[in-house]
Length: 189
Image (cartoon, rainbow, N blue to C red; front, side, top):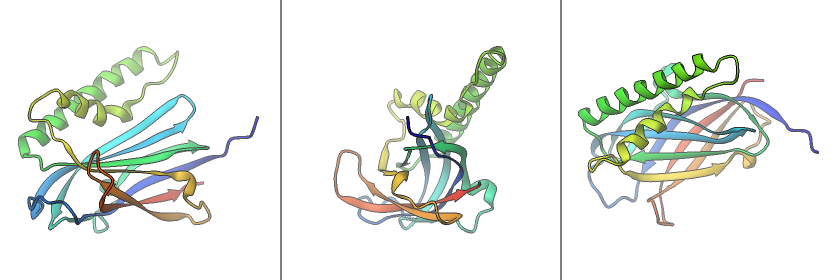
């Protein structure tokens, strides 16, 4: 059996640009940006994070924000992993508040489960944002993804302490690239 290679990494938002959407609704909108780290380790299918982004004229730049707002995940990965991103359609303040409440609800529920099972195993509190979004999916006014993309981390060189990763974005169910999301992958060890 081959020895697995473990690395501690951070994933930070850098910028995003959506250039080929027929909608002209991106002049100034609030959207949710969701990022999944797929199969970071054995037994962990995904780690997820989501946050609000204000998109102006199809672009959003996160580089002027402080680290605490840009960092999405800090995780140990081993072997083969991937990063998946999605951007939802414009969401109003009420949807953002509902998303925040649902995220808190799922985090508290998982925290309670963690305390109950502390002697046996571990809970995955990081999946709370995605659980909150999935709870909203059944609703008629749930935000839909307007752009999504995925990239295999194995194509990334781990020679540099920080690597910028360009993730091509597509409309769900289509093959045409409509923009890019750039994330920074920092090696911590």
